[in-house]
Amino acid sequence: MTITETQLPDIYRQIIDEQLATFSQRRSISDWNSIPDTSQIPLDNQSHWLKIPDVISVFVDMKGSTKLSATTADRDTAGAYQLFTGTAVRLFHEFEASYIDVRGDGVFGLFNRDEPHRALAAAVSFKTFSSLEFAGRVKKLTGVDVGCHVGIDQKTVLVRKIGLRSVGGRTDRQNEVWAGKPINMSAKLASLSADDEVLASERYFRRLTHPCATMSCGCPDGQRKALWTEKTLINDDRFDFTAAYSLKSKWCATHGAAFCATLMEADTVPRGKCVGE
Ligand SMILES: [Zn+2]
Image (cartoon, rainbow, N blue to C red; front, side, top):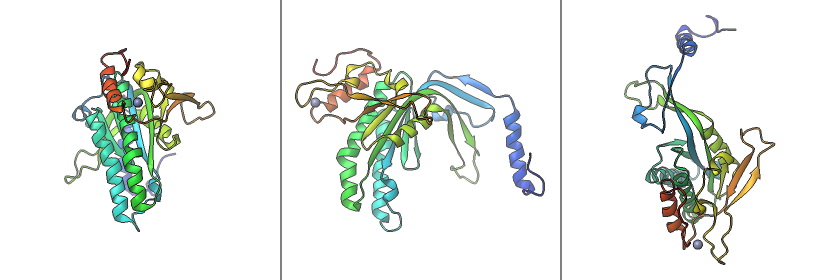
């Protein structure tokens, strides 16, 4: 079945035909070791894609955002979105995410395969902000219970820019398109997570080798505990893995900053000592 001449005006059918011609071309894929700078992601030559192995995606989205109204509480709703999204983008930037984008009321940051601890430090920092600063302020202002959902996954992605180069100075007609599992899976894990819970895929969780990423600081009773608990996803066909790991804790008020700094070093110094050891 194809679209007939009397089914859709010529001008629109032409566009579809051009895209179908691109689809039937042979595609070329270049392998990259790490996430390229956005300016290096191709837009021209529509059949060319970049492939990057084991990219880590940290996805945060706002719990309760559908209850915030742009009609009746416009100023407060605007403020909540700005505080949540603006902080996520700026924190991910400071944690040196290689790529950051906003999707609806969510933000995702991409990290290279050898940066699992940096990705975790970013996720826990944002979660700490959400639970100690964001949720209470927005609740006081709007009466709405908000919070954050966080998902993390890691797998190979393909990327290129898709869209129009420039139409009358408009910049909204193109964007980077990330094909592959980790962005979608991290978004789905986020949607499944409870308030202030980080849900990570098993394949990402296995990359966390540093004890500061897996064991608590021991507060308040001096007992160091495992930070993550396993959740089965065996009967959930939205995922291409069968287990996720759940992290409920935020940065400790006493040791958080030191843990964060240690995790930032952990990707270059794989099995260092943990804070307090
Ligand atoms: Zn502590």
